[in-house]
Image 1 (cartoon, rainbow, N blue to C red):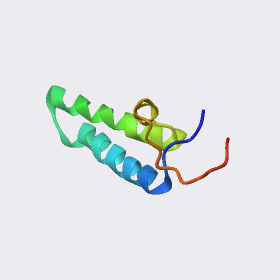
Image 2: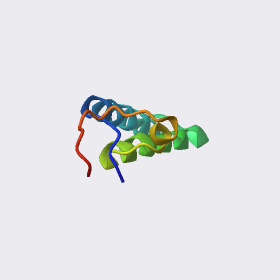
Image 3: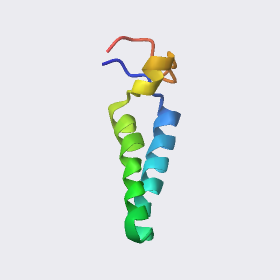
Image 4: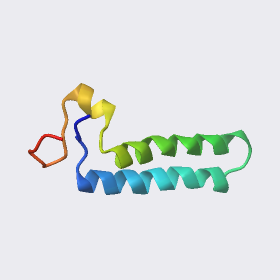
Length: 67
């Protein structure tokens, strides 16, 4: 799996993911579970690969070497 997420993009994804996950603790009722959507940006940041970027042909990673 080739990496297509750069370091700045990864940092933004971690921040967004943690922000969304905090909703699980801040909201009440059924709406709190929408915070689990934060797992998606966290997973793509940890893996360094975004399936959406692959489909759209976007690459924010500046590395020119193959994995």
